[in-house]
Image 1 (tube, one colour):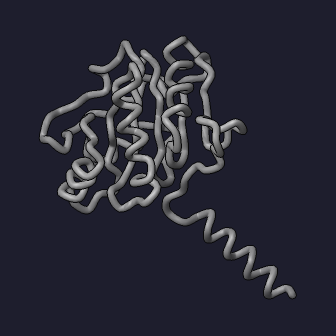
Image 2 (cartoon, one colour):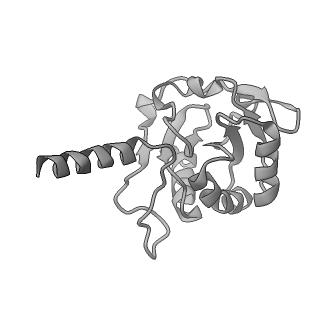
Length: 183
């Protein structure tokens, strides 16, 4: 009996620690009702602005500081990550509908060709910075694994973090709207 219990505990621990993860359970509503996977940071508790800059997959230079003044959605993803593929159509739709700047940050890519192929496959048109340790600039919110989505306030500070795949544009719309309204 102890071996069975030990095996189950080990299997659960391994599952919890494995690579990509995703949010689920939105049922027929467009948002998570239990708040699982979403952390919102009170404006008074937000750290300084996120200082991420780098070369995009298109070879352009991009600095998040240039986007301050409005809400920025920063999505950390990898072309090799199945939940990242699951959320890509949701993020594409949200980027077209929401009044926010979207920026991708490719995470642990072995090839920028893979990342560009991913973007073409899903029709992602917003810029993606190639991660060269910039992810560390997220401070206490550094992702353990993609996908992770950060909503930055007008000052460039982390206002909300969605850990796991964004499963509906409604979830992201609610968070972006709240941050834009000063929350």
